Amino acid sequence: MKKLVLFVLTMMAAFTLTACVADTTATATTTTTATTTTVTTSGAAAYVQGVTDTTITVGNTAAVSGYFASVGIPFNDAIKAVFKQVNDAGGIDGRTINFITYDDQFNAELGVTDTETLVEDDEVFALVGHFGTPTVGATLGYIQEKGVPMVYAATGINSLYFAETVGNPIMAVQPIYLTDGRIMTARVFKEALFGATNDALLDSTAKVGVLYTNDDVGNSIKAGVEIEMASLGIESSRILYIPVTADTAVSAVSILKSVNVGAVILAMNQAPFAYTLNAMYDQSLEVPVFTSYVNADVTAVDHLKYSESRAIYTNAWVDLYSDKGQADVVEFIACMDQADLPEATRNAYKGNSFAIAGYIAATVFVEGLKRVAANGEDLTWASYIAAMEEAPISIPMGGTVDFTGGKRWGIASMSLLKYGFTTIVGDNPATTDVVETSYASETFTKVREIETILEIEAK
Image 1 (cartoon, helix red, strand yellow):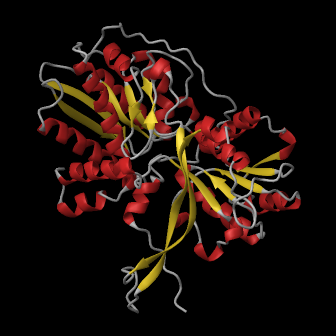
Image 2 (spheres, helix red, strand yellow; image 1 turned 60 degrees about the horizontal axis):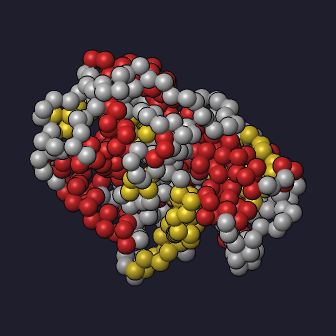
Image 3 (cartoon, one colour; image 1 turned 135 degrees about the vertical axis):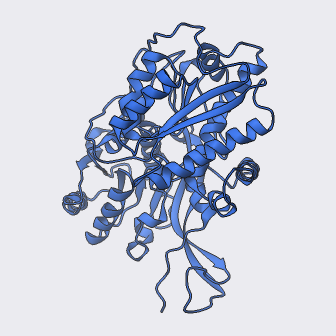
């Protein structure tokens, strides 16, 4: 029998929007509570830079060389495509958008220098698509001090989370890991996903294991788990937290098996997710797995080591299959079609999750410009941030992000996906040794609609 070939439908890859966070596991940070820092900025209320009668200059620093270039290049190209579309249509209130970007190579030191250059030398109006954990984490204090608007951070670290801080220039869009952890925990304890037919609640006495990496990603998700456990009133004795590395994953899984956990939360990104799944297989730990939206990536799952009794569930914040999602996909494709890129690149980006992330970043930023223009106000930092806080903003192919009342929580509603296989009719383009009439394809399929934490808790 021919081995099942790893094959991912390009639009399904876009649907999961898996790795646009561009994270690293190099930095060890412990985060246990949500950030509620009071925002202070040195900019005057009516301050503005980067705006003329005919132009608005914005920028970012992103990795377009090195390991993360495969993320940064499509991300930035999609931002440029959105701005070109806006400019071709006459701009916003008579102003076209000028985009400046620097290559920080996913290096915090370069990211800090580049960010300072953008704000102080290039005098950008805003940072759009601030990229990656190292640079974002190293520059948030500087951005708040200067008061320059930052729209969409391509990471989910908890330092992006603020409570009600009206006027805060930090405006994260994609889900923050704290929220990610809260939602996956609410799903574990409130969703009927267990039992032989996947329609029962978790047993009321079952323990849950949390395996986490001791870095920004793992600790941020773990903080969300802890907060949601308290919110649900779940006894702390029912949950076991164990840090893992590639060297300790097997022993950590063995501990969870010995206490007979009923579910496992994997608080980590793609590489640790893959080796921890393999450790669960090696130790025959057959319980459902819940993990972050960044891991909705079939390439991280060894299909030969998968079983239904070890179901894999991930969060997701983009939905291509709702009526709204389908309409948004059409608009996204139209935007890519007019980009200043080779045709092959444009076509490839139509199914690229990082291009979708850049498209969302630029689209959300432009919404604020449109609101200021509709209000008939002068474009300043203060008027822009106030416009973003007027009402929730619809996310292309997703739900909403709500900055009203100073909320800085990122997207706080997600759907639930489940790993599995689907049958594709036709010949598998990934094989050449035989012609098929149909073949099995790995996929993550939606099993719950986009919901808020409160909606899940109310079940």
